[in-house]
Image 1 (cartoon, rainbow, N blue to C red):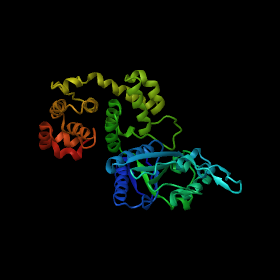
Image 2 (tube, helix red, strand yellow):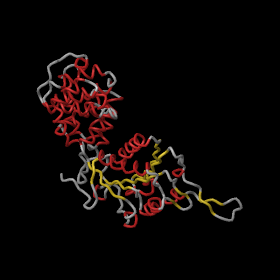
Image 3 (spheres, rainbow, N blue to C red):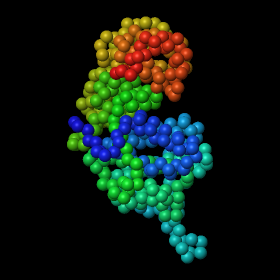
Image 4 (cartoon, rainbow, N blue to C red):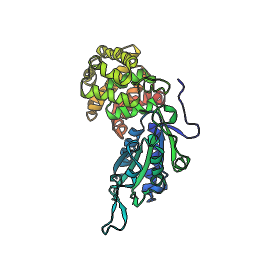
Length: 371
């Protein structure tokens, strides 16, 4: 299926989107320029591609780059009426004038050490009367008598009208008030997030083997269950927090990503029974690596998951690096690249490990070509 694109706006994977916006807002904050200098941002994309997740990751990136606390106010405009944005009318003390009670979304911490993010989600699904009420928020940062604090930035998100989701065409007057970016699916960007976030290693390994299954949304299909980054995150939550047995969880997994993809995932997950004992690898033993490709994908994901749980034990990490050096070059690179995602600046910790420095000298040039 050919992916539909919006023709005249930039398209970015989630990782690049976060980096670009974080760099932009950080520069504004450090220079003491008002946050309103940056136009309100509108994120477009199909259901489940990661728009909401991107906003949460942006908040985390801003905490790290500015040292300020961040607070996200998530407003689902689909559930709002125009009056919900302006507030409920009531009489003043002497009952001569109507005043508007401040909506809860405007109750934000105005401290200098806080960055507020007002996230207007599902804006394209809101009726046009509600979209019109968003005019003042996106441009003037006010609704009626109520103003957003100076430490607040505004981001909106919604599905495209071509996605066969609930979506109304955005009025031109509102569209012209926004900075538009289309969010695109990217496996490399998703994997970097998944490794840092503790996504189940079976999910990461399977999608590394079948990258096209990360995003299975098709606007022309009537399927109710289909694969998206959002639905795979829900699969991961089931495996991490309910039961790790894919066979046992298969009916629920199929209800999230569809039966066809779930059958392949279940079949592939059985490869895990053929893997070397991961603990032995980190204990310094050198079991024979598997030779078939699907098992190698499973092995790299399992090693990364184990490393994430033991990332402060650099002696065990060093043992696993020696083992990774025995893997085929492409898969060895995948392991090292994933290790660098384990936490911010973890590469600096790896550089202090002689085995990693030695690996960089022999295979570091392959980093840009990792599978």
